[in-house]
Length: 373
Image 1 (cartoon, rainbow, N blue to C red):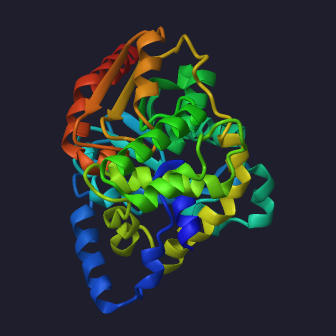
Image 2: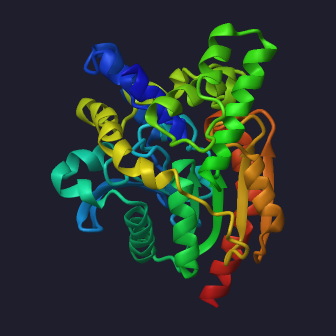
């Protein structure tokens, strides 16, 4: 399990909710705590919306969660990381303030969480390809537009989800007001090299003989050798130990991994399914993920905003900043989060909200006003 966890951190810093399995989910104290969170999370405004349901997307049942204080607000479609690490059991930790200004749509991707449980794995296994995830995101955007009577939605993605989000924005720009990338993936091999170099530099600075020996055993990385699971495990371990996933923390991130324990949206079976979905999905998408490269995209069809953690060495921010500098777009903006690494929504939720209000919401509101005239 330890090796699996580290490997999953490689892809999106979002690893299995193993803590949900280590603690009895039905313990009375946890039930009481979940009731408190559930009550706090209730949308009570008459203009609001709060619903969780299954929809038939891409030929399978996919779970969707929608929350917001006012149905008239712009809609954000948020694509989670992983792969197969859903946001739904963690949104209670950071999303509520965003819901005052946006209606936020989260969904468990194929192979993830509640969606993993809702379908026969044998029927889904052969569909786990990036293009299929992109198709799903487009289909959900279409579904959301119609259900909530919106001309377009804002597309926001985190980590692995940015691979899907970029693909959807490039293929169907007519669906989206703007694209917001958080922990954006531009080129996976560049990310691997930068992350490795950071981990080795930190290990040498602090005289960590164990880390130096492990990292030097796979150097040069990634080099010209295949990026195997064994090399990935070593390459991910030490950059995250030195704050490359959560700034100023090691890679344990209990605040994220234990979130499902208190989530009103997840029961015990759902929480266990996070781990099962991770394992089910990882090997099937890894080879294709390792070849992801958006460096050749020189024109972006819609406004693009990148939220970049200054200390992110899981999906390093430097390639994103370089890409943003040279890309042509109707509007582009890079926002640096100086106290964040990879987990921006959890590390600097206040700045995340302010940045959305300054750089994203006004454009969506203006466009929707124009559409209704």
